[in-house]
Length: 319
Image (tube, rainbow, N blue to C red):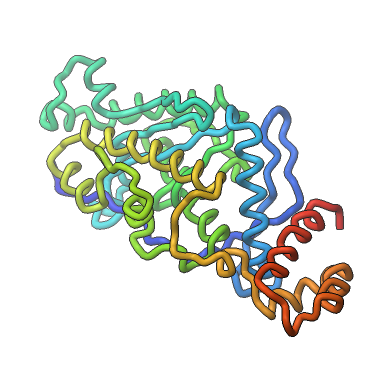
């Protein structure tokens, strides 16, 4: 088969800002809404507010974990494909946040059902048909579970993400069910909002696993996945996909209970600085009073932490 490598999009700085205005779903979660914008724009406020909104998203997810699933998939490289062809999907895994029950969709499972053989040579002539059958099942699952919110890692564009899977399904003749953007939470960006851009070095995911002693059994790096695809090792790719949704559940749980180890200090994660103090003083008159009474010139770390607690109360109030 033609050689292709499985790759993942490069991590970029956040340009999606969390807001406090909730979105209401019939029977679904209520999450803080999102708008597009540059991290440098006024609407982004500062790390202090980004941290607060990210924490609010985590609380919303764990308030109803039975309505939340973690999703990941593996695919052919979206680079160097003949004539710009869309990358083939290899496997998809969807794991429930509350109980870990996992649905999986993969090429080798369809091949086994079809009884045509499981080797790369057996699968290749039928790949498009198997892929179409796999995506039929995947989109049927999404439609049946339309009230779920999906946590993912960088699945946000037509190269790699929900839209890439939708496009591939259309190419194969399918009509995809569309998961609305307000039912998607990008964990990679959420962690940046929660802790700041410098919370961990690149590659972020692998470094997080190492720093938190999270076992990487069956977990493949991009290079390893490339080699697996080239060699037709679809079972190994599927195991890696399954392992990654397990890892993401582990990471988001630790982020929620504040036990996720990273390089950000408390002040960096919360965005505590003179600039933040001035911003809060202008936004809320209570902060101005606290600053004056406390004496900002000699404000201690404990006082700033008091600002954090006070802001949590204020941010939950309308206006």
